[in-house]
Amino acid sequence: MLLNLTKIGIPMKNFKSLINTLIVCLFLAFNLSTLKAQNQSFYNTRLAYKFSVDSLAGFDEAATIRSFAQDGFEGKELRWVTYNAKRNYINAKYKLAPPQVQINTSTSNYKPIGGNNSVNAAPCVNEDFEGASVGQYFGNTLVGWTVASMNNPCCGAGQACVNIATTTVGSPEIWVRTTPMADPWMGTLPNSPLGGTKVLQMNDNNWGSLCTRISQTFPVTPSNALFQFAYAGVWDGSGHACCDQPSLKITLKNCAGTPLACPAISLTPSGAACASGVPGYTVTGGVSWTNWVIKSLDLTPFLSSCVTIEVTVSDCDGGAHQGYCYFDAICKPMTIQVNNSLFPVGTAASTVVSCGVSTATLIAPTGLGPYLWNGPGGSGITNNANQVIQTATAGNYTLTMTPPGSCAPIVKVITILFAPVPNANFTNVGNCNSFTFNNTGNGPPAIQTYSFVGPAPPPTFTTTAASTVVAFPSPGTYTVIHMIDNSGCTATVQSVIVVSPPPDPAFTLPTPTQCLNGNSYSFVAATPGGVHSYTFNPVAGSPAA
Image (cartoon, rainbow, N blue to C red; front, side, top):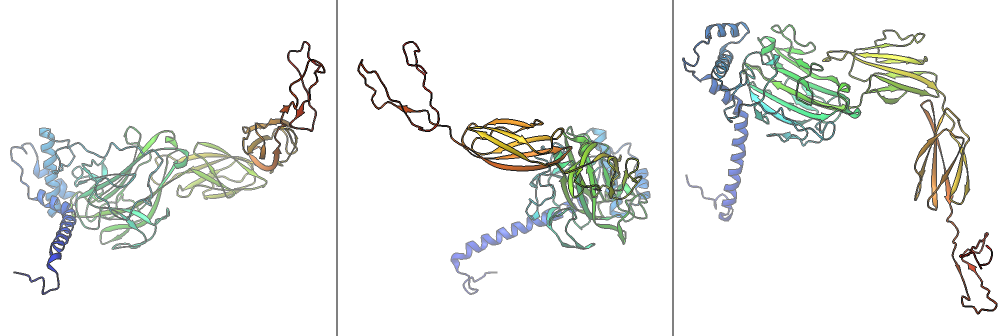
């Protein structure tokens, strides 16, 4: 067919530009559709694959099929897991690839990748995805995170119950989304309970055979000793045993990449075929889904070290049931709130002083329940399961927290002390650049801290002495800050002083030339006031000082 461009209003000189634009649009559409069809194409290709009978010598196909059928696999899924079992048998038999690692035909490197993560220099980089742009992410381009994936089954049947190996950099199904947003199962996905408006979506709502993993390695400091994450997602567990269902896994590793026993979380959907599934899901037609759920990880055992957080979301290992998840995270210090002030409890024992009050209100960290408080005798705090307690008794309070996913209780001992608000006050007496500061507030054992702001401030120091002499190296106006610390309660007062410049010792001789007779000189000082002293050198034959 010939197209008359002039008749439809397109100048011939713009024809080339039009064609180029159409080519670009077709190219983008083709690539997006190719990414979307990647898993399905992989799945269908393997269903049609025929293995050599000689290669499968020794493989009991009938027993394998019976075993998979008993686990609820049928139709395409049964053919899919059977193919994978054959593939793994041949790989192990001829040492073609590590057993239980699905071969990715796009690469000849069978070594799982994504485990050698680079360590973020700062604690938790873009852990909440608020620093990322909204949209789909291809390759390993999500700042702060390492992204990897593979086509399922990740390790043959039972992928949800083992450590999944990934073989591909990036994932075809990973997006940063803006909340609130519509979801086909949940209706509305609200903002993450951890704050912000951006979350990560891993995998999609279409059935397939994909594992997607994100991981982040970072140093553990007091500023990020509490790692909290939230998830919401949909997992179709129709008819499968627990280990064959779509899943969500959270794994913690040490600096050497070794998985740690604690904390670790493995979530599979509830259902008739999975009695051990995590409760709390809504089950609709065999599909388990949940809106936001918060979990917390105590990282205080790894202070001054580093950890790797891995999040893995997978479809079922039969390839015909979807699993997808929305994920958000935040790094925070481990703190206890006492009388509306936050105190770090990164170590097992901490001391908190309540100043100027006779009672203390203690609030345990949110998201780490269930809680159990026990206080000293007379406090009335015994096996108290509330997050918030009040007390008027000083002493040691033991807080035991057992959040979901922890393999051992988190135990913190908080020592509560009560002390009056101290009195901070001082006077000063100056002599040229030397000042004497006299403490008129609380004396020993209270500790005084003096600090200075000005053109050439002396160094900050602490003392318990009643009087302290301080020399200022340069003239000018200074602010003196005086703080009293009395058993952890502090009070501060400040004063402004002026350090005058020293007198100028210069002088002149109006008539420096003299005769031998009447050898008399006049000395005219640059600073006329004050007392002037003159000495002469050599002393012999000179006037007296």
